[in-house]
Amino acid sequence: MIRTMDAKEAVARATHFVFAAGAGMGVDSGLPDFRGNEGFWKAYPPFAKLGLGFMELANPRWFRDDPGLAWGFYGHRLALYRGTVPHAGFAVMKRLAESRPAFVFTSNVDGQFERAGFGGDQVFECHGSLHHLQCQSGCGWFEDAKVYEPDIDLDTMRAREPLPRCPTCKGVARPALLMFGDGDWDDRRSAAQEARYEEFLNEATSGPLGARGLCVVECGAGTAVPTVRHMSESLVRAGATLIRINVRESQVPRGQLGLAMGAREGLESLL
Image (cartoon, rainbow, N blue to C red; front, side, top):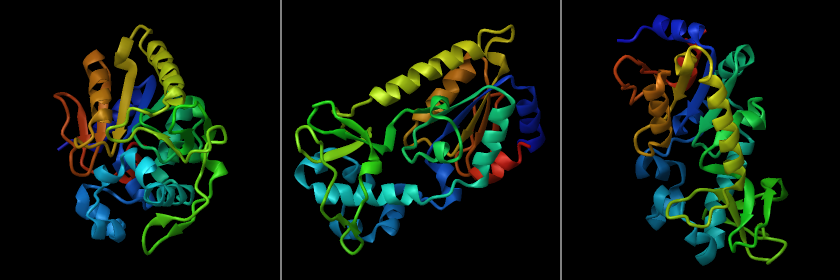
């Protein structure tokens, strides 16, 4: 059993932080956990009747074949994220980020870190963001999603017109995020974020301690979509310290710290 005191000591020693977050980070803010189709269908019963799970719906083909269905799914999530208040664990991260240089790496598309006060130049959303739109036809249009106010029929989970459209080609727009089987994601925003993240890592590891001064605080990142865990463990191999906060999957590489807690509880235990 890892003592929270060990994690506190790792935080106290750190010269730089990477805050890594997966889907479990949002659960304490009241966001649904799409862990398997049962959890997804509990949150969205109309899709259970259609037999469509999360992985089937999170596919760009629906924006071509049935845009009302596609925007019913993504539009409801957009409205949900806009109305969500980040939980107290985000404030812990923000407090630590004000004490030492820090960067956020997240696979979440919910925009919660910026809502919690992190600057856009401190966040790398490796799968994009639901808060931005792109043309699905490749004409290059890209825009903040604030131009769209979703109107969803909650009985059918279909979006009513008007749907967001590209002003150039007039086609239905899509979110600028990475879906399953997606070859059309416009990743220019995420690519710029990635460049800033790499600059941060170069700075963080260039001092006399190298990567040993870097502490990775990972929250709610599971093995089903392991992007975040892989990133965290790549930094461990370079010499960083990992604190993995995960209520179900807290296993860590040898010598690292795993806390079997939810994100809010685990983060609050670090102070």
